[in-house]
Amino acid sequence: MASAPALPLFYNGLEPLSSETHADWRVRPQDSAPFLSGQHAVPITVDEFPLVQRHMPIVFSVGQDAVPLALMGLNEGCNVFVDEAGALRDSYLYVPAYVRRYPYMLARLRPEATELSLCFDPTSQALGAFEDGEPLFDGGQPTEVTNNILQFNETFEQAGQRTQAFMREVDELGLLMDGEVTIQHEGARQPFVYRGFRMVNEEKLNELRGDQLRKMTKSGMLPLLYAHLFSLALMRDIFARQVQLGLTRPDQAPAPQFNA
Image 1: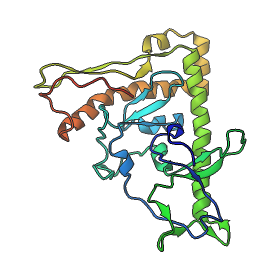
Image 2: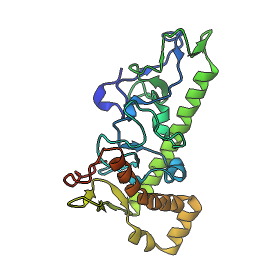
Image 3: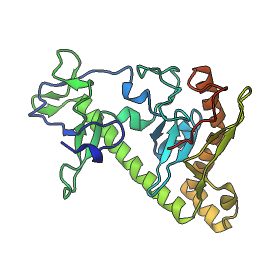
Image 4: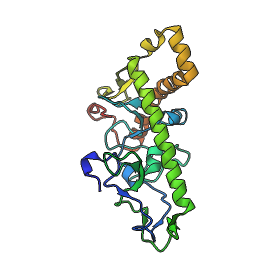
């Protein structure tokens, strides 16, 4: 089992799915995600930008190897889209693939391994030796359910590679800058200031040469950058939801820095 410090967000452990060890295991459908209730930022892939930008702000993490993030809240511990049990408040919401992938993921069982194996978080309640649910294996072979899980994870992995390539190009062009959003709410003594994330510098984007812009348009990169920029207007919608849900009080001191 993988050690905790190396595990990605949401995962408490990783165990390879085996037709021998888990021959009689079943998977149950999940209608909530308790692990998501206190999470304010979720990684997304570039494939998701067109859908995510309709529901949530898209920003980039700070530090090296920046990743795109969908904001589900502006303060750590705040998620305005799910309740305390992890159930969606709005059924129409687009749920990022990173969330839908859990508790599965493709991982190398050994550092030197070249192939990825389908693994799962053994602390998840989604699969186990249940009497109900869909079987994962039949006669030692993966069922359609398991094949669908594997296919989804392979698709996610491919999208992740495209996202890494996108981020490398953004970094090479020097388009990211430190972000800051100031929201003055009626009744608040001082404005709420959110920092600790990165965003595209629109001035630098507009200063790019024509050949660079044409290349970015052809590759599909430019529309993705503008999807990110347009989505930032939703910051105020997220803040308003926090106030409405009682997660942010207008009369309190300015909110702490947002830390993606």
